[in-house]
Image (cartoon, rainbow, N blue to C red; front, side, top):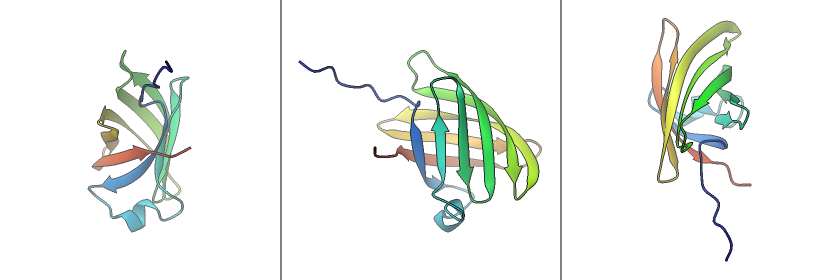
Length: 111
């Protein structure tokens, strides 16, 4: 019997929805994504926002919280966020320090 792989937040995720912006903005420079890595780091890009994350995973790895630093239209930016994996969809939020907060939905990229 083959062991079934367990889906965790440690994966690359395609952003399919953000409540503050339409998909045209999300995919403006490239297909919007979050990439959560095994070594508790990660990266994301949507619109003109690019960030590098420091991540903290739950024991079951179905939840992640993170802080991030990067840029928003070439200006320095930072903030925090989180995500919860529910039935194959990563539902989360991302906030900018002293600024906006957006909610997102993402699905795993196909290999």
